[in-house]
Length: 363
Image 1 (cartoon, rainbow, N blue to C red):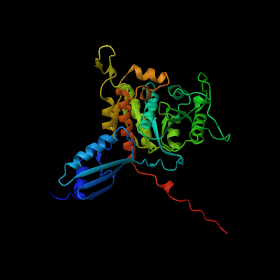
Image 2 (tube, rainbow, N blue to C red):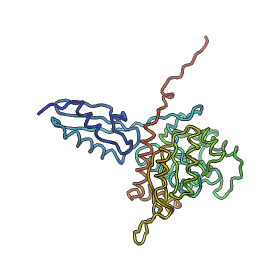
Image 3 (cartoon, helix red, strand yellow):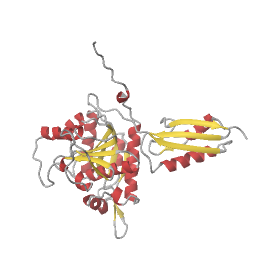
Image 4 (cartoon, helix red, strand yellow):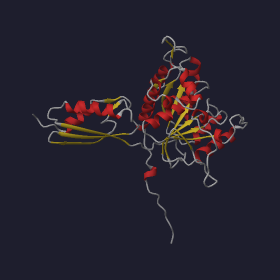
């Protein structure tokens, strides 16, 4: 029996294409170490995205490939996760206690963007990340109701706000500061200023991903926010119908103009499955989100069904990911969450926080 070599092990690993990175782990620089000693192989993998629901499948897939090599008597695979901070737009100041901000946008209202936002935040948390959500829709805040949280946020110093915690995720919204039925009759500059304060004056606690649920549209408010909030990446939520896709394209182009990478497109209300007979129907058209992703060379992150339970769960303050965590819809949200975090992990990293600050003093 021949001796197994480190090169042979690395070659076996490189034959596995990670379904979220769309790349092999060697090329993605996810292989931390490979040790070979008398037929015993020890491999350490470090993913750049949360993957609690995937690590066991990854471990088994790699163990099968390595164990099939001649000369391997024992194989130990260790899979860890380290979430990095990624670069944002030039000239925009980052937040020291938030690693990555992901903007969730839609060209038009009514496509389920807020419901997708809260479920993706909960899905990232379920995968092992520390997550926050900022409700950026000043005129129509919906996250407090969806998260089942109420009451005013505390302030220990009279200057900053403590985020409210629901289902292990941190949240902040103008909805916590005003009555639910009070209309916000504000002009654009006031909205922008209020949102900046909600973002920067909240004591976020070591957040890996802060999901920002943007208001629908691509007007002056959205553009200003995209220029002032340090965003690592954005996702576009659309439905398959042509009129929604038309507006979604505007949202995508807005982020391109302000140099925010679009991590991908989520197609909501993709199919409707009859609760009585199980018949599946494409009510709003078919494949529009995927075609749009191909047209603009961005990733298609996944499709979500038109399901009455998703709406009802959010209205009841228990979004589907926490209401029915083992159900198919929750698993779809977790798949999309892993995919978007994996796409972000491949983007350029921000090392500025790792450098010491040099102070020059005159004695």
